[in-house]
Structures are given as structure tokens and as C-alpha cells.
Length: 221
Image (cartoon, rainbow, N blue to C red; front, side, top):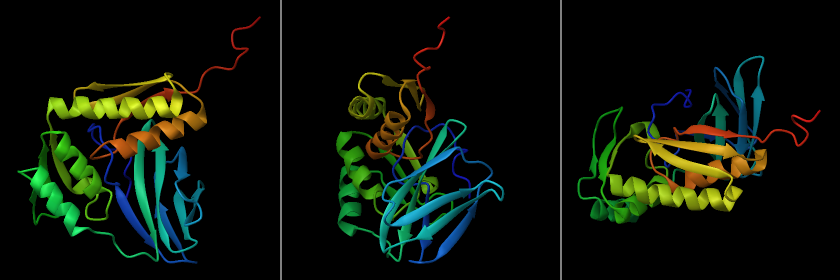
């Protein structure tokens, strides 16, 4: 269940995995490595990394839904934790996505449940809304992007980075891969990654090259 070793497709919604946990109960998920994590709403669920056993401990606190960002080796994944919460699906959002994306096709396959070409901004926005529900997980999608849409998405990412870290972080596409670069604080780094998640589509598989700036006295005699 490791969702950080992903191919270079530069998007984010929907989440990579959905995990259900009962309120007051625990769930263990084994991972080969984890450098950091951040919980969107810590009132809903508690997350702990058990380094010795290589497990992530998920504890349900109160009914609700939250997203967890996880990072390892410059890769990032997004999980949704549902605590005593039913799946959220919206037929109206699926219908809207079908209207905005003419070639959107659900499939009966286990590995690919939806194929679609993201042809314009209307389609991208419709999919963004749909993919924030529990209808799909990122590994079940096969998305194709036009250059025009990637440029519009890049603009959205740049706006998010500016809000999170001023002009200290930059984004660019290398092929279909999104590369983040710059020197930012730890807090700005996390904010930047949340902005990327909220503004993009597909697997959360960017090349994260954001680093913390050197200490102020670095290089001093």
C-alpha cells in the first residue's frame, strides 16, 4: 500500500488511497519509509509513525473526513481518512464532468476505472470537483492532458505557491512532470504542497525540490 513511488504524472486530486477507521479504533498501515506527514484536520484522526516496525498508526478520534499528506525521498502522497464516515459521491458532479469532458468513460477494469482527456479549463474544473469526492482513487485513473490545460494548471499552481511562500518557490513542467524548486521554510513547504494538491488533477507525483534555506550564519568565518 505504498503510494509514494509513483510514475511522473504531475497532478493531485483525487487522493491516492482512502482508509476507513472507526472512531476510537486503530488501523496499522505498513510502509517501507516515511520522512514526514501532516494531517489536515487533527481533530478527526491522529496519525503516528512507528519507525521500528515501519508502520503508520491511524487512530479515529471523531466522525468526519480528513486528508493526510505523506512524504518520502522527495515524493508526496495524499490519503483520505474516513472516521465513521460513509463514502461521499455526487451524481450531479459526475453528470457535470460528463458534460464538460465528452470522452469521459467509466470502465469495468480493476486497474483503470476511468479514462478521460482533459481538453479545456471547463473540463479540468469539473474533474477537480468530482475527484474531491470518494468516487475514485488516483491509481484508477487514466488522464490525458492537452498543453493548454497544463499551462492553465501551471498558472493555478503558481498562484498557490505565491500565496504559500511568496516568490520563493517556483513550478515548471518537464514533459508531463511538475517540478517544484526554491528555498522555503518548513511551514511554507507544507503550505505549498497543500496548494498543489488543491489545484491539480491525477496522481500526486511531483518532483519536490523545495529545500530549507541555509542558516543565517552559514559560511561565516
